[in-house]
Length: 270
Image (cartoon, rainbow, N blue to C red; front, top):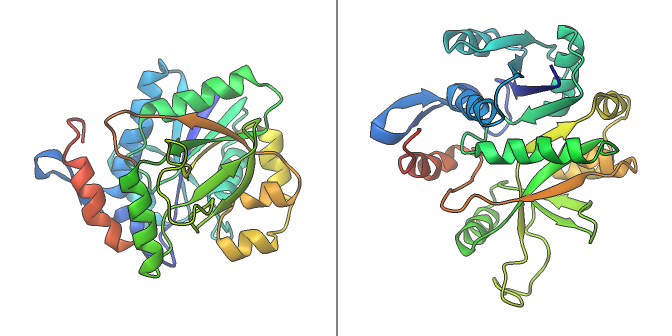
């Protein structure tokens, strides 16, 4: 297969233990696990791409593996030593003997990911064969910025923001709201804050390089795996995406459940 989508999932989350098995209500009050909703998001992306893409769940936990098999997803078991999703995806590719051109890391805590975000990333990688890693960014609306600020004011570690250069390469990712706007939500007619979508596309050599680097101080401080690429001088290309009428938010903390359930309730596919 030219492309594979891997959903890394672990049970031992510091902020939200057992998160992949958390139940979320969607349209019509139907409850599904976060893992099932993430797999549904992956399947929608495969369908939009026209098929021919492998979809796997990578985990080190038998409970998550059992849930993945219950919903008909293929499972790749990985070790408990993986420190983040990128390491788990890299190990999954090696363990399963996969040899794709493009590996997509669909985070297991982002069930609201529109399929167009995934296909936009795949198209970008095909158009730029020199790109080792790319990730989507979404220009915030005023509501999203308010949610970011509310999380930080409450001391919660929430969504990630990103700033990029004029060529679309990431300059920095942060759990703080960047850039600083001196309290202004709109600057020159636009919201200048970009939400980093927890989704990556890699080429296998970039994944292999990543596993050979030790975590750096910025990655450790921010708790953001993608900073390891920047700290080692490896460019991360950003792809601006949009989804008019759709809402995007990750399940970072238990307090995010009502927000995500409210968004799911508005979606006919959920």
